[in-house]
Image (tube, rainbow, N blue to C red; front, side, top):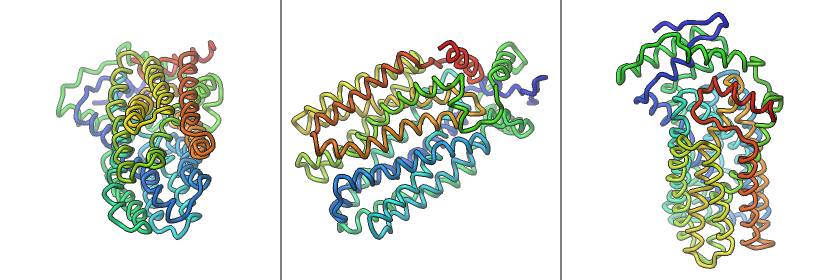
Length: 474
C-alpha cells in the first residue's frame, strides 16, 4: 500500500489508521502497553504492602510514613512533564523503554537500602522512571485504536494497573509473614523489580506510532511502519479499500488548521486554546488520584489500626484493589457508548458517596464493602478520565499535555494527599479524613460537568478542531 501525501505535506495515515479493524495487532498493542502499567503497579504497590514491617523495623512516625509514601509519587510528578515532552520529541516507544528500565533498577536498589534516608532517595528516583511510563500507554492506545473503541480498550489496558495492585498484597501475603521482619520487605522489593526484563519485549515488539512519525515530518518512516501494520492486519482480516475520500480529507484539514505550532514546549498546555482544558482536567484528575492513592496505599494500615491481623489486612486490601478491575472494564465500555463526561460524573459521584459511608463504618465487613465501592467506581473512573485528556491535545503535544494534567493530579492527589492522610487520620480520625476524600470527589465531578469537552466518537484529527473551538468559546 502506497501512502499519498497531500499538498499540505500531510499523509493519509490518520485515515488509514481509522480503517483498521480490530485484530490481533490491536490486542498486541493494548496488551504490550497494559503490561507496562502492570509491572509499574507492582512497584508502586510494593511500598503499601511493605509499610507495616518498615514501620516496625525503622521505628517510623506518622510524618515519616507520609514522606516515604509520597516520595515515589513526588518522583513521578517531577518526571511526568519532562517525559511527556521527550516522548513528543523522540517517540513514545523509546521513552517507555527507558522509563521501565529506570524505575525497575531503583525498585531493586530499594531492597538493599541501609536506612530510611537512602530508601527515601531510591523511592524518589524510582518515581522519576514511573513518570515516564504513566502518560504513554493511553497516548499510544489513542493513536493506534479506532475512534469508536479507544476508551473500551483503555479500560482493558487500565485494568492491568489494578491487576498489579491486586497481586502486590497477595505477593506480600506470601512473602512477608514467612520471613523475618528485617529482611521480608527487602525480598519483596527485589521481587517487584524482576519485570525489568519486560523492557526488551517492548523494544522488540511495539511499533512506533505512525501518527507521531507523520506529524514529526518523518513521512518515509511513517509509511513504512504503516505498511507493516497493514500487512499484519490483512493476514487476519480484510482491509477496506483505501481511497482519498471525504473522511481522509477532513482529517488532513482538521490537523492542518489545528496545528498552530509544530513543536511542543513545556508551556504549550498553558497557552490558549488549551489553558481552560488543562485546568479543568487537572482538577478532575486531582479528585480521582486523591481517592486512588488513599485506597491503594493506606488500606493495610487502616485495617491494622482497627485491630485486624497483618494477614487479614493484606487480604482485605487485595479484595478492595481487585474491585477496580471490573470497574475499569465497565467504565471503558460505557464511556464508549454514553461519553467520557457522563461516565466520569456517575463513577466519581458513587465513589464520593461510598467515601462518606466508609468514614462512619464501624465493622470490618462494612469497611471492606464501602472501600470496594470506592475502588470499583473511584479507581474505575480512570479509563474515561485518562483517555479524555489524551484526546483533547493534538498529536504534536499529546504526551506533553497529558503529562501536565497527570502531574498536577498526582501532585495534589498523590504527594500532598499521601503526606496529609496519615496525619489527618491521627489528628481527626477516620470519618473526617474520608469526608475530605468525598468532598474532593464531588468538586472534581462538578468541574467535569461545567468545563470538560466530550471527545467520544471523533478521530484525533477532528478533535484537534473541536477542542480548539470549544476552548476559544469559553
